[in-house]
Amino acid sequence: MSKLRTLEHVRSFEEIHSLFDVIDKKGQGTFATVFTVKEKSVPDSELYALKMIIPTTDLKRIENELRILRQLNGKHGVIKMLSAMRIRDHTFILMPYIDHMSFSVLHFSSFEIQSYYLTFKEKDIRRYLLHLLRALEYVHRYGIIHRDVKPSNFLLDRRTQKYTLIDFGLAHSQFEGDVNKSWNPSSVHQSSKREGRLSLENRHSYTPKSSYLRELDNSRLFSPRALEKPATIKPPLCSALSTPCRSSTARGSPFSFSSLILSGSASGGGGSSTEEQCVCGNRLTLCRGCRGYPKHPPVRRGGTVGYRAPEVVLRSFRQTTAIDLWAVGVILLTFLSGRYPFIKVDDDLEVLHAFTHLLGYERMQQGAHVVGKRLLVDPKPPPLQEGETPTVFLKKRLVTIRKNERKLIAPPPVMNEVASPPESHGVALSNTHKFPASAYDLCTRLLDPVPSRRITAELAVKHPFIRGTEVRTHISAPTK
Image (cartoon, rainbow, N blue to C red):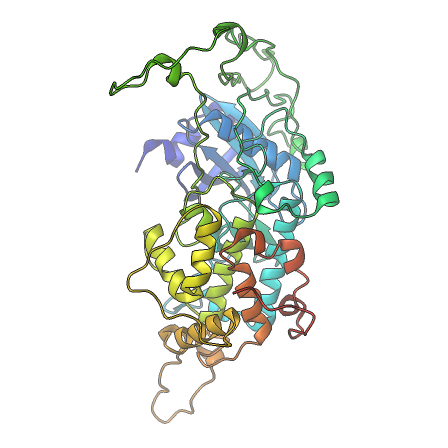
């Protein structure tokens, strides 16, 4: 285990150690580790979550996450950033601690373990999805893509019974990529209200802009009062990007931060006024003129295997907030089938192949076509039968999977005892449980391979399954 992710390493920071007792390490991901801490100056202090971003993380990514968290401000089921600081190339984000239950494991006693999601009844599934969709509706209102929606990033607090969407480390603007000081989320909010959801053709690719991260307000960071107020970003301490920042904090301040400066994009004074001509000829290398052409922005593929939408797997440049709704559809698959994770593979192409059999070859081919790709599968899955809708096609397969899921089948009763209901061994819905047609209809709409046809979070919260009513004739069938 890397020393950078240990309790001892975090405690070695005097700025942290002077303010907090670092209690425990709660988890880690690719770019960060989360610890629980308590304020030293407050008796019986509540627990807080301290997220430490590893030093090698791109500064643009850090700036992007801080700005997004600051804009969302902990509303509508989104995690709140209480404060942030940077010490010796490490960035720390202070957030409320959520004492949550794991989606896949629940301890009933010292010897019995059961999957938590299997304890959900239909009303619990509806509540889970409603709160997740409401959080995404709020996030998408600002044109922000979360990009890593999955059960471990949507937590239920044991004490308050409130759901919270966490981990915006991969989030970014649908229109600008990684956001910086020029980002104006209010204009995105207003334009989305006027125009509604953009068509796929208008969701053009973006070129991330370079900038520097403004210095955070040192005087308020990590103080007891700061915990009650939203984090703030103060004006830049340096005005020029071309020279190193030599500003320093007051001697009385408990922190000493280094300024984060990112290289700007090459433009203006340094470049030549005349465009160089191509002289590649038949050479095996590129000439200086061709190397000077702007590069195509890299395709984002961040996320978790099994939850990535087809347009992400197929490396489309047109990635929108619709990729988050696909991930919600995968979570709904777990509830309908009783299987977690729903697809147990570690390769994106295998996931794509599995969905081809689950949703139908023709529909997946349509999804590939709109992003300029062609999907070839051998052997080809059986097509939809005449008159069969995508919803019926999906339902048949999920019903079969659920019947064969061993975790849903109650163990045989002990001799001379009456057979117990599923609830007695932690399973709320048996392997033969029949979900309403509206559940499969919503799942089909969330898992539409064509991004522009995929249901939005705003519409999904009004869906009959979420509202607890059956599908009516005013809801048109999903397109084949």
